[in-house]
Image (cartoon, rainbow, N blue to C red; front, side, top):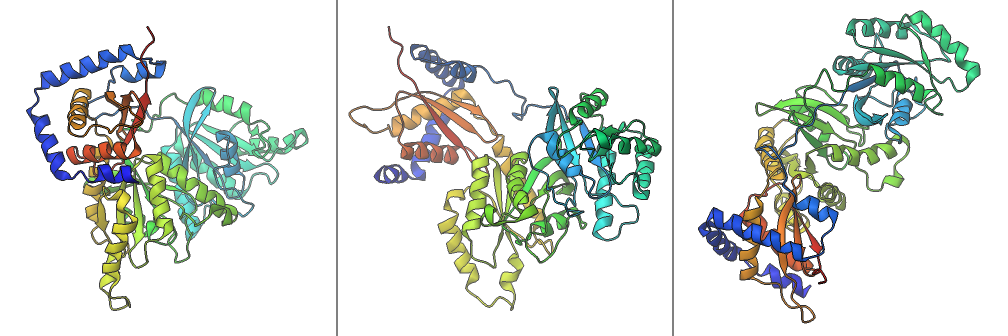
Length: 511
């Protein structure tokens, strides 16, 4: 603890002096110093990873690597025919919600999948009903959107039930799409049921593929055929990176996540209900905010303990983390009418662990000024809670909003842009080593056991989040590493993003 205080006492004035000295350095001198330091590493034991790290990193002006969009395979069909079970079989893990209750999947959800070294996006949809009303109608609409955005379509039918009037309606919809369609006869658990699958020839979509999503029977042959018809690149989307930035909306149950998404989208995109936990599947939605397109992901509310959740809610809780992994920036929604809880802090810590950039949205801010708020001191208490419980993310932009009324939602856009810009930030190697040299000259690492660890060389290994690697002659105290991080934040603009400082302790080569 003493070591922490030792470095925490260095104040902003020191950062100003450091910034001034760095500005005085000539760019050529900075680069020459960095090359000398890099060359000195030849005297130390380095491994293959070190060599790869030290190689030049080629990026565009924004620090992005553009990856062509994966082809999209959509799974459609009426309710309870086993679509989600087939998704789980294809992706090789239980991620899509599966229950015997029809209609558990209500929104379209995208997963990354791979077969025969071919990667593709797999879209799970809710069941399609031709005359659906209410929530069932919105499920049908999502299926129609998935068909429009797909390169290949898997139409799943329950072979045990046989073709129904609803299936025939779906067939007419699929024929209009002019996309490759594979007729999947599900629930063919053994050879004795294959005759039931043959009846599906009558739907006019060609040969049915008999499979058992639960047992895996026939799925490999079906995927072989699907991959033969699937383009290597999506004909629908252009780029996965470079398109709308992906924003995960996180928060404990019933803090207003779905209300925020609906207000942003200008429609009832996801189910909103006063009952906590209404949202189960992460939902992707492209919306326009601030004149830009954003892909928003609304996620199932994180419950206090996952093992206490039952059935579909259990898997929805697990997938919240998955949705965060797919995102680039997270909006953590906090209900200002309630004390900041351990759950709120745990969700923020999930964002930090994932390395995603972060924006804090304090929702229901309008209610702090209403007569209904019995506790007139709530705002003062809130500021105290933020100082105490959220001090470790003081760098995250704060936006006070009302998801219900839409108040100040426009302020989210500059906060998101700032967080993402800094998440992508790269400091040139020369400037980073100049920063380290001046920093160590100002405050060298103290002696530990009669030895003083030295920083030999530093480089930014990656962005998203900004990750720095220090080659050292010994372990740096955790307090000293935090000191380096704080100075980085003071000199460079890293608002909205975590930054990571790692060490590689290397010994001199033996002569």
